Image 1: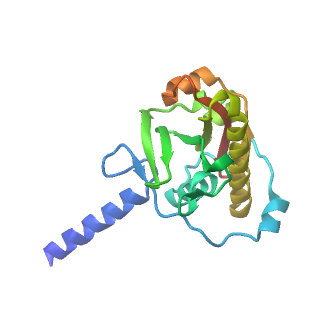
Image 2: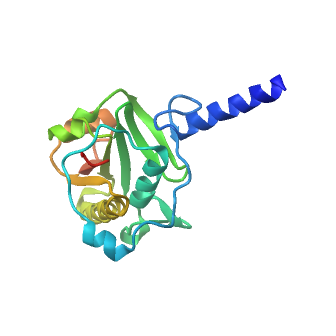
Image 3: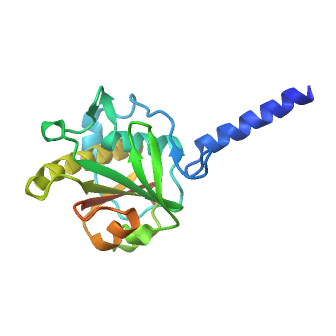
Length: 208
């Protein structure tokens, strides 16, 4: 009986760790739950309610919501194909996430956040004050060659709108931004000289 209770307790602890944003077995990368690919409001309702907000509650997003947001932005919805279009399917964009505890690169293949830097770098995510306290900042980075960088911007714009519609469907606050220090973000995210920070997007629960 004692052995059974011990195993049960370990199971609960493991479940709690896997469902908590910012925690994983390694304490480094974050492995997200499978995204929810159905439900939500009808698309026309979501479009009707889509809008920007610049006030966010001081409440972290749960792991499932984070997984669903990132899948909407840059996940795979069929074999080798993303949830957003890209020119010639080159997929010349990378998505980074800045949370209160660290900066991460989103790996859609593993459905995981790969740690780039530990610490609170939200002040690097944008110049607006609300960015510094919001639970989630998404950073869209273009990787196309400079002459074709406009294709990456199209992809980023589609990703931004997917997140907007998801936020509207789930009653979340959301805003896209272009006010940031690219130099600061490149340093924080350890980006190459050829990469371009295109857009930022802040998401969280609405301020009540």
